[in-house]
Image (cartoon, rainbow, N blue to C red; front, side):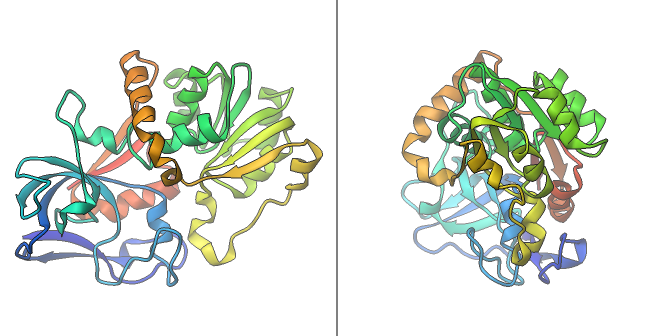
Length: 331
C-alpha cells in the first residue's frame, strides 16, 4: 500500500493542514519502462509552495487529489526500466508519498560509496548545495575580501551559501530570525556576524556589521529584507536573487523592491538565476563540494521530520522558522 499526502484544496496564504489529505491506496502494477520506488527521504523546498496555487507557476502546478510535488531519494523495489535494477538508489521527483511508480527515465541512479543518498538532497542537492554554489560563486562572483550578506542564512541554501563565501575568502554576515539562529550562524557556520531581523531595526544592525557597504547580497527572502540591504550596497555590488520566500504565499500580489534605484546609484547589478541553466557544470560543482566537505570546510545541518503524514507540518516550517539547515521528511 502507498501512503500519500495529496492536495485537498488550494491554500489562501500560508498552507495549513486543512489544505492536505493523507490517502492510502494500492501500488499500481508496473508498465513497461516504469519503476517502483520506496521513498527514503523527501526534500522540503520553498518551490513546493509555488506549485499549490490556482494558476501554474515556474515549477508547474500541483493537481488536486494528487501527491504534492517533492524531490526525493529512494530505493528501487521493482523495475521494468533497463537502466535501473532492484536495490539501486535513485534521486528525482518522487512526490509526497511512501512509494512512487514512475517512468524510470525520470530518475538519476546514485553512485555507491561512502556518501549517503540523502546527500543528493543536501550538500549535493540541486535545490540546495548546487543552487548555493551557482548563486554565490558563479552568479555572485564572490572574491576574497568581499563583504557578503545572506538572507535566510540558517536555512538549507543559505547555510551552504554562507560557507561557500567563507571558502572564497569573504567576510560573511547572515540574516536570520531569533538569537538561537544567529548564534548558529556565528558559532556553527563560521559567519563573521549575524543580523536578527526579529529584533531591533535590521537595517541598523546591518549597517553596524557592514560599515563599508555590502559587495554581494545573496537573497532568499525578498520583501523588506531585500529593501533594507539595498540601502547598504557598496559601489559595484552584486545582488543575487535566489528566492523570495516572503512572497510565495501571495504570488498574485508579489511586491518588488522599493529601493531598487540604489542599484543604479551604486553602479550595482541585480542578477537572477535558475540552477538547471548550469546543469553542464554540475559534475565539476559536485566534485568541489565533495572535496570541501572532506576538508571539513562544508557541513550540512539537517532537520528530519518523521512520518509522511507530517509532510504538511514540515512544509509549514519553511514559513515559521522552525528548522535549521536542510529540512527533510523520512516517510
